[in-house]
Length: 345
Image (cartoon, rainbow, N blue to C red; front, top):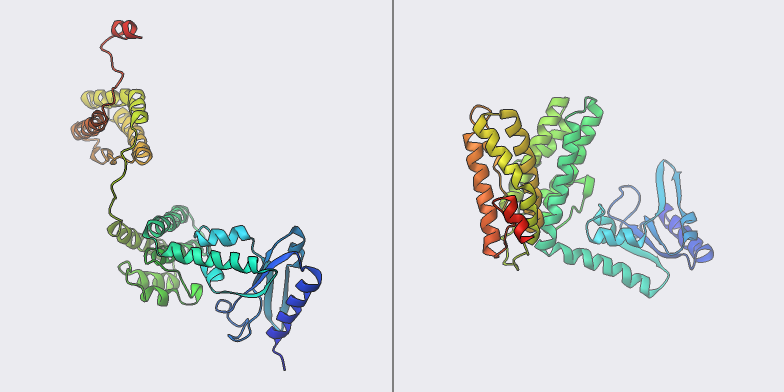
């Protein structure tokens, strides 16, 4: 006697072959993901890959004897994004078993997506930046969470933070979460690179009862992952020096900001020194990333009680930047007076 899942699978395949034969590229089952929906030997459907707009009408959600089913579409674009970890749930791709295929070409395309995902996992040049992306997403959620007062929303935010961070760790280890929400701590425990106290923080978030607990734990679990990522940052490789002409033009435009800061420090104008230094620090962060040059953290030296250190550090940043331009023999358009400018322009 056929099981419920076997009968449903037959129904889905028959429906595709009779009503959507040229419209559905693949029918995929993910036997390891949804508890209670399948047995390992037969399984039931998970999603289909549409080939035409008509295929979308195959979508159906229903409940049989208390178990919910969802036959839904996942486009080729989404699967290809999964291979690049731009779409979560890589298990849906890697655990995917082809139950029906329109053609050999569709089978090959699906297998290529799986292969691409596994290839990306073996490349630290791919996994480390993606790991940073997941950390960044967790930090963005944390920023919102800190201003939230509703306990349920705070708990949900902490849960999403934990999920993004778990995926970040998996990528750092060149792997993925095989059990998803059914045993993340077990997956993490098997990895070689684990942030300090991550698993205990992860479990503590689940057990936390108050908003303050959740906010504090979210901060600590983020910091534990940040620390590990900082420690594991890949060593820089020799690269062709970037053309810094654009940096020279930026400096010519922003040079007056340094002048403003020096004047404010000399006169003791704390407010103006703070505002202009804040602006300049932001600009320096942008050009450091854009031109691949060292960052200049001079704003940490700001103190309303004594502006001497701020001026000193700002001067160091300016001199360092000018030395980089000098190394590439890039001339700054600088004149002593208007007459000098007019005589050469």
